[in-house]
Image 1 (cartoon, helix red, strand yellow):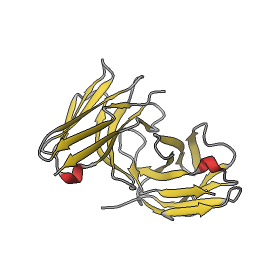
Image 2 (cartoon, rainbow over the protein chains, first blue to last red):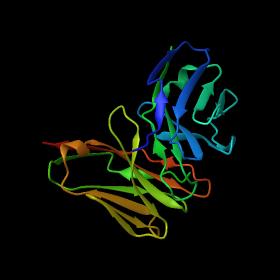
Image 3 (cartoon, rainbow over the protein chains, first blue to last red):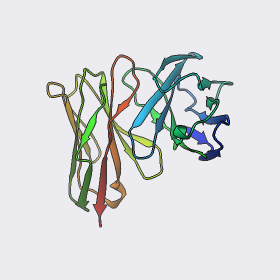
Length: 114
Length: 110
């Protein structure tokens, strides 16, 4: 069965450094999402992406965050200058339709900011 | 916020027993989805129930939706050790982003 894959599984970065989290969504999917889960807290929506542009973003997704689909397969989340509070699990998801279709999640990247 | 909230927070049952968990939400929805998360892993989609549906089944899973009470339940029948996980409900509205609850942690004892 097709899967969403994320790399790396664990990223350790010094505060202030840039980090890029990578995702390969399911190949025929058109809608892409990033979520994060701070340890012990709820899964929170960050951003949705369709047709090469952001369709919606949350308050968390400030100017330090950006997303890109650099080619036909990858979907990346960049954090420009990481803060301690960016430490979390980051999940990528994709779906083939926006409405009434499940979102399929990757296993996540654990981001640790030192 | 239309986030779902699960109840109970934690549930411990014997293998073979049924597990029931509930989810309440605040606003109108397009659909409600249930996900499972094993420790340290991603979210696995279990069932999607649309706002005009009242009940859905998938294998040992049964989901109900009561839009008048803004609540849903997930029943796992004949539980197995492999069902040990956290279970989350998530709702969508016009924006289609998922709004998650805090989850129910289910432990199935052998």
